[in-house]
Image (cartoon, rainbow, N blue to C red; front, side, top):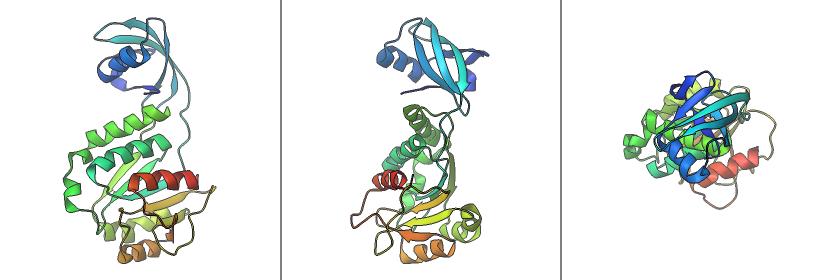
Length: 235
């Protein structure tokens, strides 16, 4: 981790925290820190700064902290993502969190297997765990908003037009569509489908909601690769 992410329960005073568990293990084994060392810290959904190790024991560590600057800005993006297979979902959540996506809608699709919705990786605690790993990697503190929509048609027809209003609406979809734009300077609503792509009916509904199909070329990419490629191209 590139940032020790602190939660409210870690604070034993306004400027002092106590760590244990995974973060303590990281301090011992990766940082190989010693008392007096300074480490990068951030408060979950709050400011970032530095922490000085005041006490380092096998079962806990205490740091005096100073939080003084804001986390990096988020991308001006709402990402609509057809629910990936469970193992890929974990990686994608880390990626979007690390890349600064502020809002993700996990959406059903004809090509999303029903069993995917039964995965324990969709439990709130499991989602939060992956998002935190992404924040630690990127030195960010603000958790993305994750919205789960199991009914495609009602969401796209009833809620998506308002969600996408005022943004550049795009559907990532293979085929003879215009290329995905580069280095845009406005808010974007981006829909990424399953690895087999959206079915024509879904593309039509998304288009009616204000999104335009675009493509990255002839190659069909894994969802996790497409997410990274599209975000890098757009922003």
